[in-house]
Amino acid sequence: MKSQLFRRYLLSLLPLACSLSETRAALLLYEGFEGYSTSGFLNGQLVSSSTIGFSGTWGGNTASLSAGNINANSLSFNSLLPTSGGSYVNTGGTVVLGSTLALGSSLSGTIWMSHLIRFNGNHSTSSSSGFEVRIGDTAGGSDVVRFRTFADTRTGTSNVIGTDYNTGSLTAIGDSTDAPLATNTTYIMISSFTNVAGTSGSGTATVWALTSAQFQTMMESPLGAETYLTDATAGQYAAKATNTDAVKSTDQIESGDFLQIVNVGNNIQLDEIRLGTTLADVIPEPSSALLAFSGIALLIRRSRRS
Image (cartoon, rainbow, N blue to C red; front, side, top):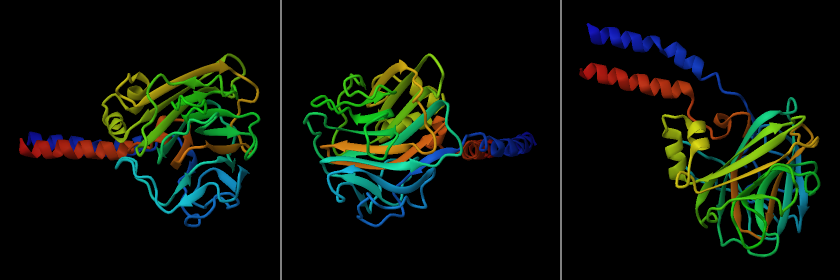
């Protein structure tokens, strides 16, 4: 009798589990490089119908139209972050490609970004070499760039990860003190930017690079992904960097801005770019309902054995 009552109690929690799945905010930007021409040049292509929050045509500043291609294969990372479709590849040169943001309103507060990155060859050690994903005012220009996530900080031989809130300078980037990202390994880069569109004070940018195993540990943490990540110490991530800067009037993320992909000299593969207002938007983590259903199902099985 007690076990039957316990099962009824657990089942009564299902409506709550369903409501929890609706508490997360919307994914504002998404580019998974799906729906483009297989092995086609990205420059000049209309944004795919599979994207979220983008419009128009990819353009920018490239050495040639062949610089920056769509690969037919997506980057494989972790079963908790499944991928499909294609990915973006660039094997060197200097390539800046941008896509126009089409947002319902300008963003403010704290913004989270993520993407998958893989270096398919040794890091370039040439001057200003590196790789970053950022927000800018034009498709391929370097003026007024902000909210920058570096898998390679473009400072020559350092080759570490970094982040830049709004300085626009390659010499003022918040560099990591950790080792560079390994080649032939897929990482997830997760960034947060505070005080976006603020009117005073400062904004802080933080970026973490995680391996698949570290991502799995974060997702399974009873603390929750965000608490685990923000409290993580060396060994719980592959690398981390921070940067704080005074807020400027140009610290905006709004329609008409551009998401820019910048590669100088590296052989890289990029996939699953996301931007949202919560960490749960950009990892993405299993829905609260799924976790609740799984937990309730486990408890019911245990109650039947008792």
